[in-house]
Image (cartoon, rainbow, N blue to C red; front, side, top):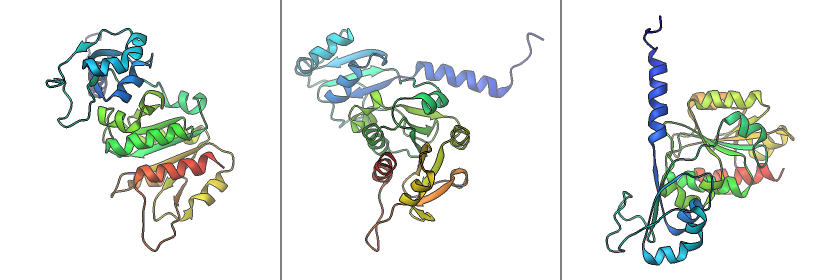
Length: 261
């Protein structure tokens, strides 16, 4: 039976693994490129810089041991979106591999605090969430592999270096990842304007247990399955009669509240 045909799900999994192995990302901007150069875990493929940018990145380039390609500022020919503020520096890299959710959630650095993003596709929002997650000591930001913001130069620039240091894990199924966190003792608090309790009360009920904050995309919010998998749906109270926070601001408020319990 050695020649038996593989099931379609096995073929798909192998195909996806090969595609991910070939995937590359172009980071741009002095800050994002410098942080990536200084990250020994980041696999670096090509560095394209102007002479002026190289002067500013000289120490980081020497640390990384990569040979830069010098580009004319008037013809900065790299595959990034036109209009991107690259500051004369761009680098092709492989996406970071942060390992398994269970390992990060149980023994990762920082507080037992995780952010789950349900189909948040805007790279600027995700970049801002990563930055807040690093500031408040969260162990990871978790998103579904599909229908989420991929690791891109725009995300890295908004994250202001956090992409190199803050675990950003992609999972096949968000609800299954949430159930996995529950088995590890995490309390799952969904954030929504129509929540049944205030965030402070939800965190008080969680006591000293590990917490995962679950946030949805602008507009659609949390999907039904995601909402059902949460332990509680909480709201961030606001003073005015009208008002709401975008997902990155809500994440920052939630992270602050959870980290200062």
